Amino acid sequence: MGYELETPEPLKMSQGIYTGSVTYQVGPHGDFDMGDNMLPNDNSLTLNFTLDVQHTLKIEIPPGGNRIELEPQGGWQAWLNQGRKPTRLYRDQTFNVSASSRFKMQLECQYLAGNTCGFRDTESAHLVPLNTSVSLPYGLTDAAGQAVQRRPLHLDGSGTELFQPGFYLDRKPGTLHFEIAREHVESMLSDGVTKTYSGDVTVIWDSEV
Image 1: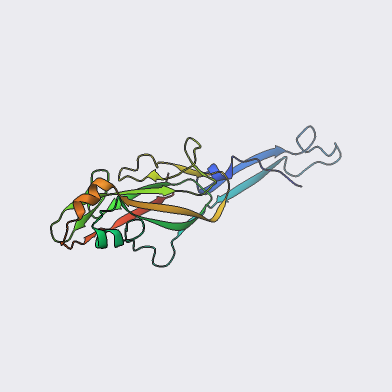
Image 2 (image 1 turned 90 degrees about the vertical axis):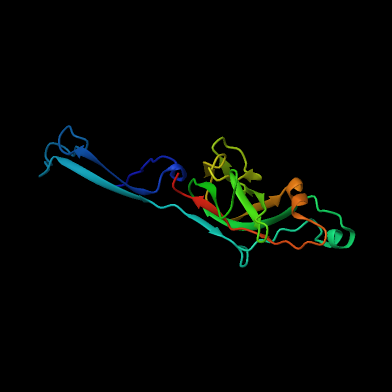
């Protein structure tokens, strides 16, 4: 006896145990009819099915990738030697993602700056917002089927409520983008004044969608 089981698209199924059964009649004029001379002891045959759907969502960040230092393009020499304020401070951090199911993303912050995280000066408590966004590899799209390039991450999770794979991804590279915009960089820098801005940002990949 053989069978073929048709299921929904496994990549779109929620993780869990799925059970079901089907019953066939055995005997004359039944589903299994082997003639009037072969009568079964039991006129029904029940097949029970148990399907275990297990998804993968794994994020790998290179060693040291959990400590981010924002810098201007080309480094700090233009500011230190010529007093030219940088147009932005930024850092791109790569990561590898393995995924077989949908997920969502959002932020948690040590310092809040509206709907995103902030960096705070340790001396003056001056706060500047940090723009955090994500680019996901080919094969991962949003709910509308669009590619994910520099998609902003927010505290309320808006805009990143659903990402889904079109096929299984195994250790494909993505990027987290961290940036402080120009108008806020100018407020951070003062001639002859040393400041240190810091803050903790937690990026969450959540498979409970």
